[in-house]
Length: 142
Image (tube, helix red, strand yellow):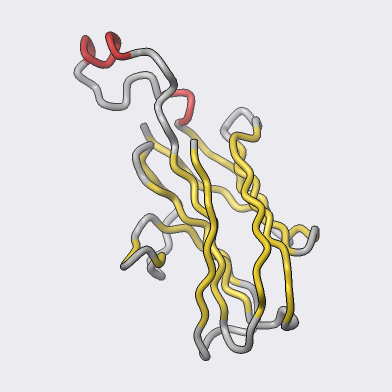
């Protein structure tokens, strides 16, 4: 699995942190098309819109937990807070476990061997070591 993070800014937006998930992008920037259901093959973006956070340097931490509660990925990123609405996002891409090529060929199923990733995942988001009030949930189907 891979994960990453980026930052984007604009001058309009909401006043409280908003969290949403999407797999849709334009030029590498996540679109405001929220969903909670994803495929094993999606690049899943956790987008956090900030407006009330004070200007200056901050740290974003995103922890991704599979259906069994096992932390699969963690993204930690320092970013600079500017004026107006600012988006920060982390992403997750699931990669097939090593091996299983014969199983995939015999089953003719491109998701064969990825069943362990299917189910409800929890995503915990922290800014400056403070957890956002809710634990987010997404559904991954394989």
